[in-house]
Image: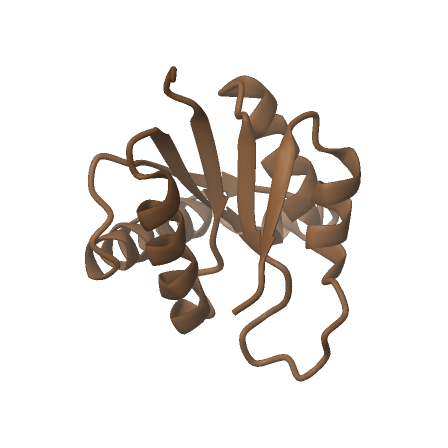
Length: 139
């Protein structure tokens, strides 16, 4: 069977859920081409961005990449490609999935600290509009 491209969306702000998701994805799909993505949501608010200094935006992206790499290391995920994106979460994930020709997007259905069992808005958007299969993992 040919290698597939798997995109795993994590939220570094919720590291326990992100670690569980990464471990699950690595165990299930580790022989494939794995991409791990985190989206910095502040880029979505275009009316605020002009007031955030460029060096602050770069520092935030660098910090997010460092945290993403640490998360991958703690989860024992190796040989995966990290991505730090900016903008609307659903939109950025769908754009990246198209760019890398993902055959599967793996993400948590809800935040780990949520007591609701409903689908999160970003997960719903991605599941509804993705051109590939989407696996919603419940933690």
